[in-house]
Length: 215
View 1 (cartoon, rainbow, N blue to C red):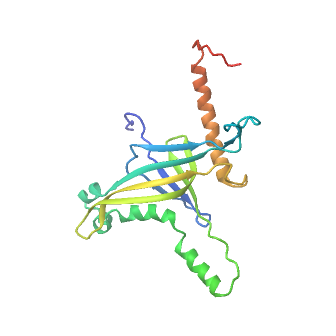
View 2: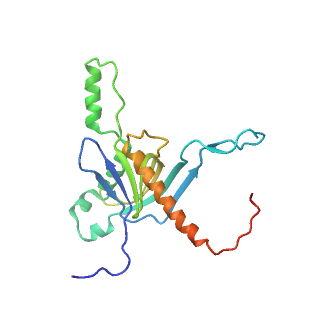
View 3: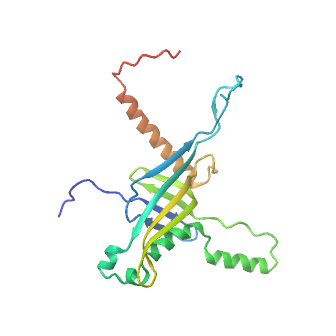
């Protein structure tokens, strides 16, 4: 048996889980993004200027947004004469990513049929669960808030064969969801992982002589 040499490489991915389909759609990144930008905005009250009546208090989990640029190309597949790449370029990968922003066409057709039959109220369509997977420990429930694609190169049929997709996502946390929702617990497990990591850092501080005047 051949042993794997070097560190194991994890591929980032987006996992779409539809309640009507037991098989999740896994969109693994062709190349892991070189940069991942995260913005965290705490949700607190109190402590504002000229307000001395309240201490700073948490009102929920912070609002976190994630921005990544995903690189796609069909160069290797074209060199191997892959029939899908030859016929479609990177359209299949782009379509899988882009459809994360769409309701399913079958649901649209059914909704229109209900309206045509005189149904007074039709409930909004429920989006599939979307999980952003980044490494061994990070699997965050997210909603897609922005999608920008730059197609850089094309084949003779004008199929894109190289592109950059910029994805903007908002992390869904327990302040956004009911406790009966699976993603409520998905995010809570992630926070517990952060707390465990922070305890490791606190252990590293033992032995450091840092004098403070905090009372």
